[in-house]
Image (cartoon, rainbow, N blue to C red; front, top):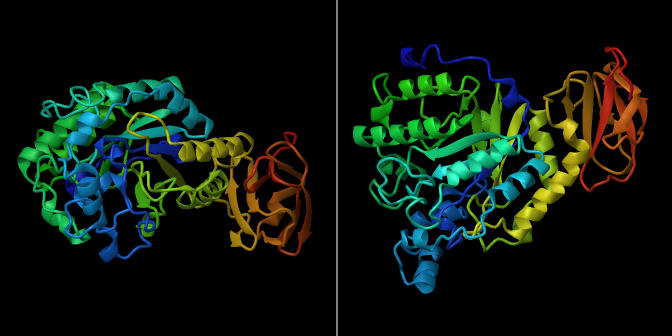
Length: 447
C-alpha cells in the first residue's frame, strides 16, 4: 500500500475475530425472476461456462444479455423480454418481517448480518442520494429495507453491516454484457462522477445506520482513490471516526482492508492472516434461485462442518440467504438455518470466541477439526462410536478426564501414542460431535 493509506491499519476488533458466523442477505429485483442454472460453485466451474450459465440469480440482468444463454431464452419465454426494471415494480416484499428474519439468524448462531444495500443492478434498498425513484422507498416495496434490517439486527443483539457494489452499477454504466472476468475491467465505472456518486452513497449509509462493517464488492472507482473530498481515504477516516470498532473488507482495490475474503472455492489464497472471511450461499446462488432444490443446498449438519472448518483455520463464515420477492425466507433455506441453530445451541462454544488450535491436527478419516478458546480445546468430529485415533501432537495439554459433549455428556477417551481415541455417542442434534477438553495447564474450573 502507498502512503495514501498509511495510518489506517489497526488491530482487528475482537468482536469480529471471535464472531465465527455472520449472515449475508442478497435481496433485490432479481428475487422476482429468481432464476439461474445451478451448474456448480464459484471456483469449481470453468470461466467459459460460468458467465453464460451463471448460477448466481443476482446476476440475472447480465446473464439475459448474453446471446445464446439459457437465461436469455428463459427470460424471453417467461417474461416476453420485459425490461429488468419491471422486476423492481413487481417486488412487493409484502410478507417481509425483519424481526422474524433476525430471530432466525440469531438462533442459527450468527453474530452479525450484512444485507445488500445496492447490488450490481444499481437499485438501492434505501432512499439513496442521486437515485431518484430507482430505489425501494419510491418503487417496489416502498420501504427503507436497510433501516428496517438495521433496527431489527440491533434489537436481536447482532452487529449490522452493509454490502455495497462500488465496482459495478449497470444502472449508470455501460451495459455491455460480461462474459468473462476480463470484461469486468472494461465495464466497471472508473470516472470521477461515479466515484462521487458511490462515495455519497456509502457516506449516507454510515450517517444513517452506523454500520459495523463496510463490505464493498468488485472494486472502487479509480478516480475515487484519493485523499481529497469524497475520496476513499476520507471515507475510511470518517467511517472509523463514526464507528471506532468498525471493519472494512478487502474489495476496494489495492488500498486498505481489515479482513480478507474468499467466495465459495474462489480466492482461497485470501484465507489466512489476522482476519478473513469465507462467504457462500446455502445453495449455489446468493440471490434466491427457484431452480435449486434440496440437492443443491447445504443442510444444517453440512453447514456446521463447513463453519467448524473455517473457524479452525482462523476465519469467519458469512453464510448467505436469498429471500423470495415477497419477503419470506424459502422453506429449504429456513430449514437449513433451523438445523444449524439446533446444532449451535449445543455446540456454539466450539465456534464463538475460538480460533485455531495447535493441540491437534485436522483430518478427513474421520473428519476432524480443532478449535481453541480461552481455557479449553474443542475437537469437532464427524463420527459415531469408536472413532479411529485422532492425531493430537499437543495431547499433554488435554485433560482427557474432562472430555464432554456440548450437552454435558461424558466422552470416553484413550491416549494412543501421539493421539487420542474417542468413543462418541450418537450426536444430539444431527451433525458433527464437538468435544470439549479442559486445558490441563489451567486452573480447574469444573466440567
